Image 1 (cartoon, one colour):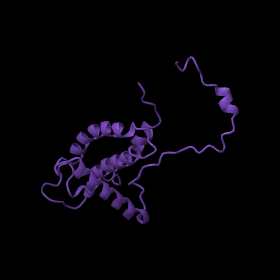
Image 2: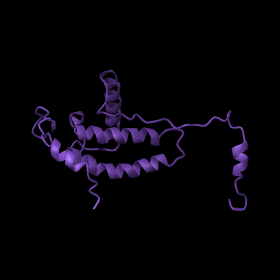
Image 3: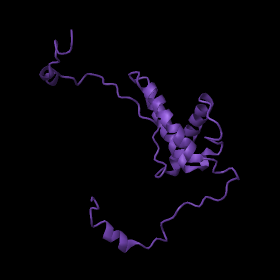
Image 4: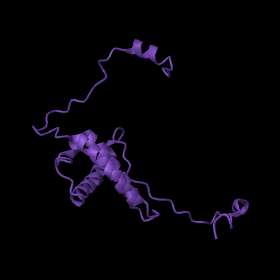
Length: 154
């Protein structure tokens, strides 16, 4: 018997009172927007990520050439690892239908080259002061204003 032999009666479902049905909503992952993270939440977010990174690097035998012990000093690595952490948490949630772990491992295979590229031995000669890129000295407001008034779709 196929679903076509016994179609679902959508009108019946729409008429049913489902107010007492307990829908299971999957847990959300520990998604952190590092750009807007406030000081009060920072320690818990960093501790959670550190615990996961330590577990992840041991479990999956991730070398220090990919995720060094100073990973937290490399913003691009933090973002990549935090994304993997959030994805892992959701994929292995007990409410998952069983496809999450497989999907997570497929994503991991795509993430490993990004992790390599994010670090690529940046601190092999030690860490210096962090000098993030700054936009404060740019003086292109007129050029910007002219640019955004056109679609540039051609």
